[in-house]
Length: 424
Image (cartoon, rainbow, N blue to C red; front, side, top):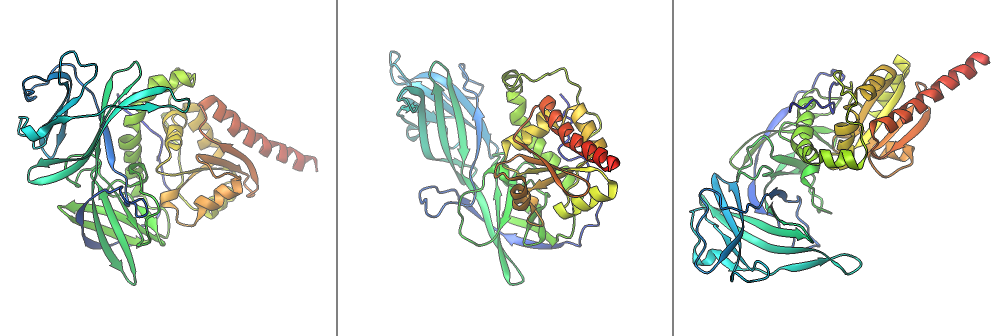
């Protein structure tokens, strides 16, 4: 199915500042959560894999005496790693053995089969909600390199086992720009054993101590700008452990971020939302017959001050959406609500629609606008009149019909003001 999202459809044209390129030598590191006082800079990537009842092609044979209960195969560094959940006796109540082809050679050595323990996961009322098998620090030796991973098998009560692979490696390097130092991190988000893929993620940060790891959803895709200390940084290329990074003074919106931000929606969020769509639509009672927009929302990626000036110039109400890369409900607005034909039409015709993104905030607007809205949560949306007066706050995800009610309420305020002025 062809996707047509309206997350980023247009930018006010601006001449990008001349960018300088620097080469950053990085080193391969492994995420370590053991020291909570010194957390890693990034969180690891994870992926859920289906457990198959039948052995897939190429699956190694289990040692004699073990009975297979489920098969998993995943690709990493050009190899297919096979994992088999098994019982040590046919009449055993639960699986108690795990076979991992750690080196991808298509066979299970003696050190690749071991016992596992199933832990009961309880809810607040003390009842068992799920069972889990967790293996930390599983080192896979593939193509001459060690890849550290976590294995998580989980079964909800009454359900089937699922498998989740958590990868724990990343790149880190330091670059000096003038008297300021920055740290660059890159995560192997597509889990192919390299950092050169279009879906891999990166960030740039200062040298201050890490307060909490950055999640993959709060990182950037290659080429996408990140704003820090008044500069726009962008990762241009990676070759091995060498990272090519550009930076320039961030004097205005940069058209180069348009396609990359669309990629963020399609690669990081849409794949997740596609899987939940039917269940989410049923749970939220969404009207799936509503037409989808063909004319994208003409978002502006400008500062709050620039947005107010533009609204005054065009004599339109100002609509501002405050969001962040890591915010799942922000992207559900793009996936379920902004794609609606009536929503997109109203925002384009009656408003100046603006997005302020935490990771691309050039002017401190992310915190300032939320303060003016009177909320700390996101997505946070607001409507201002052409004269800059605040009219309405819209908090949290809204389905199209409810969102349209909020937008029209903001416009009705404008119309009532105009009637009062005419009466005077």
